[in-house]
Every structure is written in structure tokens, then in C-alpha cells.
Length: 70
Image (cartoon, rainbow, N blue to C red; front, side, top):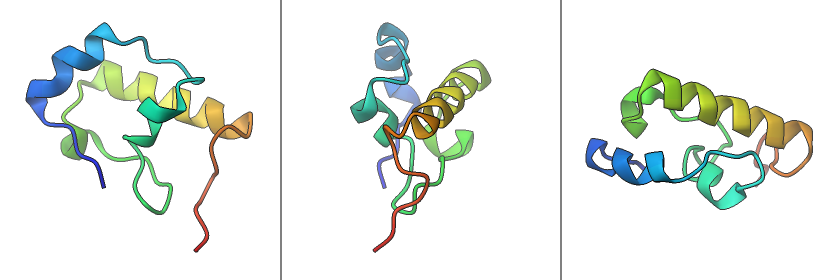
């Protein structure tokens, strides 16, 4: 499980949050495919909403799985 610390938020602000950027979005989901909370990622509420919306959009377009089956 990849966790962002609050010091890495500056790097995220430079990057454009887009549903096509699967590598960035995978950092914000756990092994089961659940979206990580704000507390564990250290994002602001505005950034968390953008991440959540992008992940859900990518799931609907089948770019990301809804859940990981092992």
C-alpha cells in the first residue's frame, strides 16, 4: 500500500490529475481496489475529490478494475 506523506503534496499539485494517468491513480488505491482515505494519503479535500472522481471515471471506462480478485 503506497502512502503519500504531507510533504509530497507539492509534487501532486504540479501534476495534472487525469483519469487517463493510471500510474498516478494506482497510488491512491489499496490492494483490494478501494480508494484510500484522505487521512492516509495526506491530500486536501479538493485534491481528494479530484482523485476520487478520476478513479471512478477510469473504472467506468474499464481502464482500472473495480476490484482485484486473487
